[in-house]
Amino acid sequence: TQDRVFNFSAGPSVLPEEVLLKASNEMLSYGNSGMSVMEMSHRSKDFLSIIESAESHMRSLMKIPDNYKVLFLQGGASLQFSMIPMNLFIKHKKADFIDTGAWSTKAIKEAKIYGEANVLATSKEQVYSYIPKLDSSSFSNDVDYFHITVNNTIYGTRYTPENIPNTGSIPLVADMSSNILSEAYDINKFSLIYAGAQKNIGPAGLTVVIIKDDLIGKAMDSTPTILDYKTHVDNDSLYNTPPCYSIYICKLVLEWILGQGGVKGIEQINKYKSNLLYSYLDESNLFKGTVVKEDRSLMNIPFITGNDELDALFIKEATSKGFVNLKGHRSVGGMRASIYNAMPVDGVQKLIALMKEFEVNHK
Ligand code: PMP
Image (cartoon, rainbow, N blue to C red; front, side, top):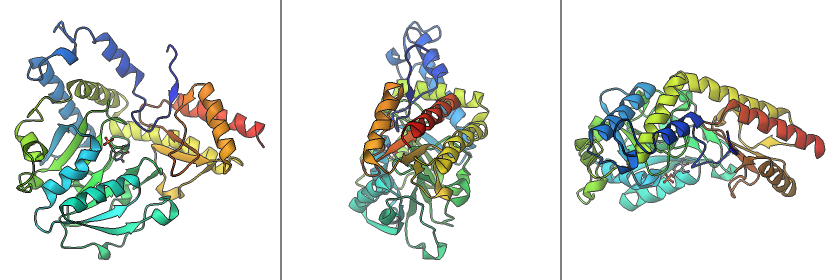
């Protein structure tokens, strides 16, 4: 539609056009309310029905068992870096971490404020181009949790569903900000999953936390009321005014995913899209992927030409043709195509066509 670009931004990022159109149709009056969702009380019947639907869609899409709570919070994934140790440093005040990039590093930094953070493995020496292989015999028994970043937005790596570490009785905590709802993970392997909304869930301002019952209500004494998960569990995520509009868009996005065949349906599309791009990168004489094959992300695909000037030229040409936000993170350089759930297959196919054309012109 009118003047829309192919937006490869890492986040906030592309949303399904159907969702934007629906929201625009409902902008002035939601249902029969005569007002926008932005204007209504978070305790109104209309809004309560929105947040209840969002939760029930999330539960059915991710197959979340009853002994997990789903919370709609604020503060981004970054606030979870603090809330998690405040609430989960119950016994040992210690956690194991795998360092797979900048977001893991930030989570580690915050945990250290409240206790001990052991880094069991890191791929830093190879610019985080792979997920470290883990030997479960190196896992500690005397930690309160084990933390991983499931999809590494900047470097383009991910733990596949088969590769999620088995931490036994130690609660596994997972940052899924950049790949939640993109493929099926078994929730039972995790005790806490968190995600900032602004990639696969909806607009910024909303953070989704999925937490197992047995971790709730044990926060450190010094935990502020609003940072205690129990506060939000006891108040159905309505302790204070929630990010109402972001939750409404989240509900629409989840309905859109249901319409794509749920997570299994969208997973097939995501595998198809990412395979198209990876296959091209593997055969191209100009563009190369930067991540080891088995750990490649379905969502964030970094690539380079090996020549900074050519990279800059490609980004410039792409931008002028409506393929925007392809510049890679400064620590990796080159390009990064973020192809979240809402990126249409067409966008990836056209990007590849553009890359092929550029390759022919710059042999
Ligand atoms: N974790 C990951 C994997 C991310 O990609 C991001 C943001 N891009 C964050 C955490 C931080 O999220 P927020 O900006 O919502 O605090």
